[in-house]
Figure 1 (cartoon, rainbow, N blue to C red):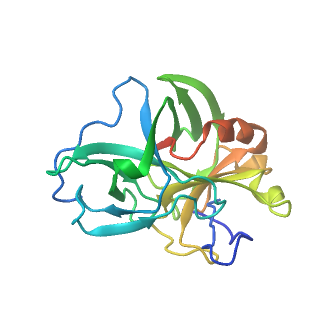
Figure 2 (cartoon, rainbow, N blue to C red):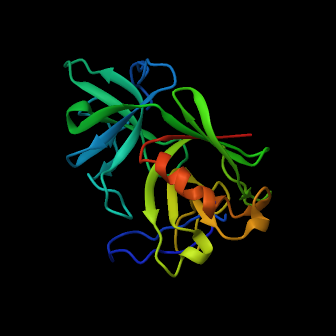
Length: 241
């Protein structure tokens, strides 16, 4: 999972934790058809994500047009598309909530879709982070990952909110904490947060290439700016064995 703190954000915002550490829906069409690409959905009006593509389906999450921590545009990874019996178009998006893999359907009229060609892959066994663009690996760096007791969760996630750190936090977390739509399977709470997993920097070179965190992915500060440049909200992050 994650290892870290509540950020000094507006009082109404939840604490941020960084780890140093639709049933019944019709079949969804693939969100992207270009090899090496995927789609994102920018929420431009408050909306409700539902368990199935239809206005009567069960609500699963209220979505705002801004992110929880840095208040930038809320951009989510698209995982499917469908049309309801009334002819309304819906998109399925990865949600920033538990459990891991949570998704919901939102009206296509409430989001702006964009095709992207970047994705991030974390290999836990090799302890590497890779950036892929248009199906080609363009960057790789060694990282620190979760321990056996607090493992980094595996699965298909997305960047949730790339957050610049405060000056007081940079010695520990580097210049950015890139939160993911991933949560610890072990730690339900951590230092006031809910076990949110993130990619963040570190000045501790001895932790790189080792299983040392509470679940977060530690990147050398020298490589973190390259990772941040690729890690826009909604970019897919595959965490694999």
